[in-house]
Amino acid sequence: MKQLGLSDSGFVKHPKKTRKAEFLAEMNQVVPWSRLEALIEPYYPKPGNGRRPFGLETMLRIHFMQQWFAYSDPAVEEALHDIPLLREFAGLDATVEAIPDETTICKFRHLLERHGLAGALLEEINGLLGERGLILRKGTMVDATLIAAPTSTKNADGKRDPEMSSTKKGNQWYFGMKAHVGVDTAHGLVHTVVGTAAKVPDVKLTDTLLHGDEQEVHGDKGYTTRERNLAASDPASGPLWCFPFKRVRGRELPEWKREINHRMSQLRARVEHPFRVIKRQFGYTKVRYRGLAKNTAQLTTLFALSNLYLARRQLLRMAG
Image (cartoon, rainbow, N blue to C red; front, side):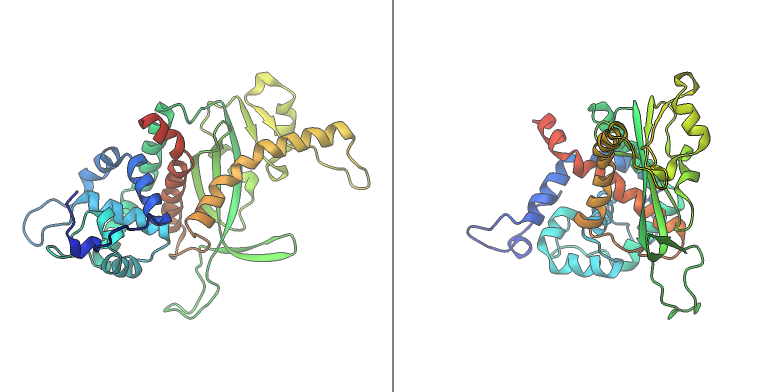
């Protein structure tokens, strides 16, 4: 990382440590930069004829700041010009070198999408967390969340994104996609991400969200089937399927079944934590791109970063 001059950092006698600065300082320590760069390096342009590419670490840091602060390509370019803190995190000195423009930033994102590197980044981060004992493979919780997509037809094609769809939840209709996740029961960290159109039933993705070594699987009523209910009573058939008891119409559940449902819901509440992080902490409430592939790649990156965010305090303690 390059040392910044007074023009970048600004001369303030007693600068306030802002929440954004504290967040970036924490993430700078917990992100395994060298391991992630090693995954991307074989695909990254090499210096040669033409303009020299920006450093891989710089572009990866800019890409992650896009996810953390919900920046578009043009917005992150402007932010790098306007905010010294972001330039410092990216390792840029505006007084001696150029700032990546939005086209360069967009091309880096396309490189990650083209080579399926978002999934590789999630696996590498989870590998680190597994080495630290923060991801255990004994159980999985499955769940899904709706991500809204623009319904406007004011675009070049004159139509909505054909890969998105509508679905009804309660009495409300939604248009967009679904993010399906498999989450570790011990620490609530995401190990599998699948993106689909909003109309795809949750139950169809259950097996896809499992890593195969589970001793138990937890889900809500949307994941139950007759076969899984039978498997729940036969431990030799595979993992233990843990689903809440359904109320028969016109009849109340007995007290002991309500108590079991309550305890199951307390455990399953952990599956909501990654959704809270990407939607509230990172500000991801609506898809940014057209098509499932691009948006699923972004979601995979967001959940990988949410794992680091949720585990950051344990990782910082282990680092001393």
